[in-house]
Length: 118
Image (cartoon, rainbow, N blue to C red):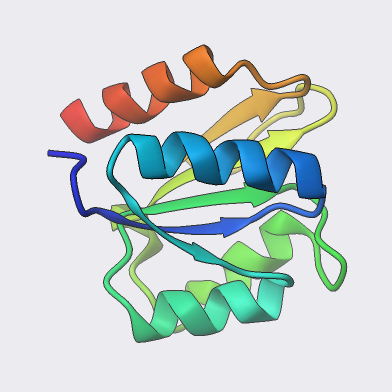
């Protein structure tokens, strides 16, 4: 069920972005990388995306602002969203899963698998 699912990856750290890309491609997902929150919004509006993996703070906006903006044009209730943060915070949306740094690739794989099965 994961094979060929499209994912937008918007993570600010190069090493994390590469590690996440490697994992997602290994899981046979199609990865679209976004350098900014606005780039991620454009990708999410233009493609049928199954997952969004993003940093809580991108160079141009905070994750919650991006999701609020995205809500105007995309049904985010159907978008599996994983937000990477430095410490656990309260998550304002039911369909958002928080992953705290340092990120275990095995744990991230497990989370994605659970989201696909749900």
